[in-house]
Image 1 (tube, one colour):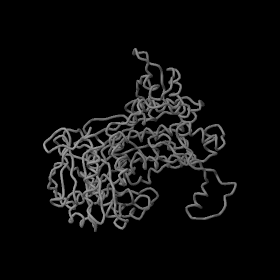
Image 2: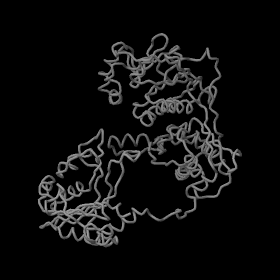
Image 3: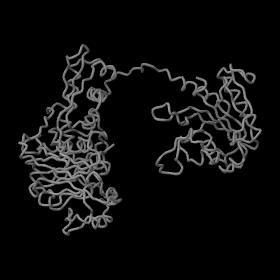
Length: 591
């Protein structure tokens, strides 16, 4: 989860209260976050440089606070302070609003159709009358960096640009041009670069080089201009130096470009809601109209709340405590969710208004979780789950595990992913394209598909332990993946049992007796061939086994598995020098 570093003294000053380390740690726990570490800025530098000088008394104490990955509003000091002050009852939930502007005076961002080729979406907003000091400015920049690393997925989904509005003039245009047609002075530079030259220039920049791949191979680059053709930014790489914000900036223009409009809106809402507290009109944001070439347009940001209606019984029943509607509403208000009792239905419900800062609240379960956090996890009484009974498949799996272990076999656990070669050619099998699910973009040749048999993993285990004293007796109870058009995902899991004996001799009789013992434990009698009330074996012809030394297992007329002596070619493929016998069967057949 993300960790936010904030100065202790500045944090306590903003909270309006002072805590001991233990008290603040307890407050964080109650709110659902964690005080991960207490350090100093100089201590961090000393640690990075492997220095051992002692700390001095004048070093500022830094609190490293771990926050949930989906709580983007907690990624800066302003959001943390606001949330904690509301939680402890010092502040009310803020009311974010858009400035009431005539349509003619609203800034506009015109989007050219060429942007569809690279980053099609943009949302914008303006913060008027902002007062920055060094700490606020640094927090503003840090929030952008944390959002870029988190929800923006290293700028691939969304990139944020912030500009001094007094240095530029609307209306603005968002275009996509060939890189040789884009010329500007980038941030922290004094020389004019062409966009393609800039790609080469930043390949040596430790911070920016990791973002170049997003657009460098595209025939067009996204770029934002003002009405005087000043370049505001080349997203997602760098802003222009012309519109750089400083401590003296009073009016901030924020633009978020991306490939995901929903995430772009969340990012913009987070930026403006966190720092509108420093505006001349607190919590007021000036909107911008985004206009597309086809005539469609929308106003951003969208600071409206959305309502959820959650049954009181769902909240209290899931948490396991008895609470009145008024108590639940009070707890939700502590978590920045305005709540009131709904009388529209016969069943008592809670109407929850979700503000733009709480993009993590999507479902009734999110509301229930916030009630549990505000109530206190440690206060929730312990109770037994409604059902302690495991699923039938789990029960039979455990029964088989126990029985095979008592027969002297050691359980192993292998990867469900394997290479295509291991699953087929190394087992002398051919792929008929009917059962194997392959991975479209495997990162490694070792993990190209989901296994259709437990045999590859068992053989690799023996191969990696071939110097172990013999005999080696191992088994596995695990899932394989089989294609199934009847399933909505096109495949299904199937629980299998596999066992292998490896020693000086093949141990075929031991594997055969293990099959008989499993059937006996499961209450399945051995019957003559053709009888459907129990199981029997018959000769098989599987390529992974030695001809004439293998058999199929037939249960109630259906083929459920095989056992036999592993073919010498298969053993050679897996670099196993000793003879082995192997069995595998479908456990789900017994349900």
